[in-house]
Amino acid sequence: SQTIHQWPATLVQPVGSPLSLECTVEGTSNPNLYWYRQAAGRGLQLLFYSVGIGQISSEVPQNLSASRPQDRQFILSSKKLLLSDSGFYLCAWRNTGVYGYTFGSGTRLTVV
Amino acid sequence: AQKVTQAQTEISVVEKEDVTLDCVYETRDTTYYLFWYKQPPSGELVFLIRRNSFDEQNEISGRYSWNFQKSTSSFNFTITASQVVDSAVYFCALSEGDTGRRALTFGSGTRLQVQP
Image 1 (tube, chains in turn brown, purple):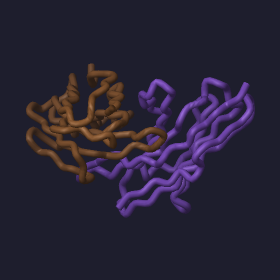
Image 2: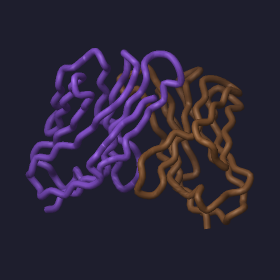
Image 3: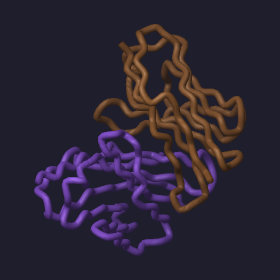
Image 4: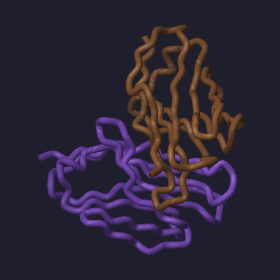
């Protein structure tokens, strides 16, 4: 079956610390993968998308980066977190089924 | 560029009332898909419906119904006889057709509060 795993669920990090959020997909190959961020009380903003291994496109200028070292692995990183990086991060992949997109359960990041 | 507008930031109703959540979209694509998602307080996105641009039939699923009108670029969502469990943030979203990045563009969401 097709599933998506995202971890950790919650994270509290100090300003200036590094970040690594991981997302893996099972049951499919060569999916389009996405990272979204939702600031408190706001909508979802697309941060990065990837159409294949090593192919990353950034949607907005920011303090974050993304990598896709394997077909079904998508990583969101930062070398030094800012307070403004706080938010709810969602990974998603585009599938061809009726649902269209499958979302992970999200990571709630608080930068203190 | 694509855009989704949900003009209603927050709606409060009393249980059993009907409520309609508005969604207006902009796209230059002739092939596109429209979605509605529900986000409960836990944060996960719950898929509600997907509609493609060639299918303007309205859809009903239990207490939920959707009205897709290409002439006004709208895809409105109605909850009939609302319940407290319907309280959540609802997002309307649009994705491009079958080429390109095919990412979802979300509206800013409508927070629905159903009072008992």
